[in-house]
Length: 374
Image (cartoon, rainbow, N blue to C red; front, side, top):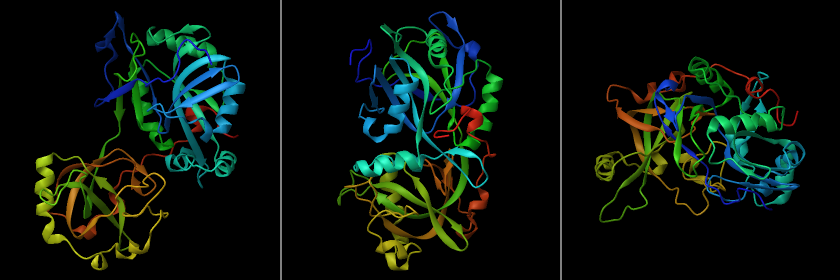
């Protein structure tokens, strides 16, 4: 493989902002404006293609090629002979309502050591790839060129793709970006990204802006894990395990973990009076599990957590906190929830799934134009 931009490459990153930014306030290299695009929820992927040779690399430069043979085959057929792209690998599944949505959990299952399972999943849950930036084309490197020029070249090179490889939509209209922010979430997307039209592609730099959904929920504190730096002399809380009631049972919904070291020490002391034996805890029935299970219950292992200590200290579920979260994945928070405040006025049994804000259903095919594997 001999390309103008060679691996390893650390992809350009984004910093969080609140609300759709004003394009008129963003000038880079004397070029005013922003390009908006959907924020995909998959595996970030750098693509290096030289003839039939294709290499896929993750955000941290680890190889992804062997896990997605169907994507490699599609790239060999659909992409120009010599090209370097930044984009996202995703899996879309059709729900009972006939609507296609991104499914991150299903995508995670694709990272497996057994080739037989990889081949089976490649056929059963085929992945797709959506490109959103151009690093090189032919013998030309584009990383130092402004995004407006990179985007124009990208549209010329792959603008007609209809799957499994796609080119992401973009707009320079902030009002349309605002509509996308609300509409596309129903298809499983994560928000909106804004790129300065004049910005070059800078590795590992937070040159882009991301606007993500944030909501709040009142949840039950059901346990905690100790921090990796915790010691017997100075115990520190690592994360709070959170729950919501459904049909009278406390379900595990996620964790909250953003605390200062001082606050970690205070919290673990504050929670000691609520510590109970696992047999007296609503999640005591899960103690028998030694491997991953469909509910992703706390304390169990998966291929993503091998070697990690996932044990937790069960707490009497008397406390309620308000947390901020971006969106749900199934019945759990997709990412770590952010602690907001204590809710001493809330009865734990009143904290259920009915309070969660569900996005309006939106078909992913409306975002992509076709379905992977169709």
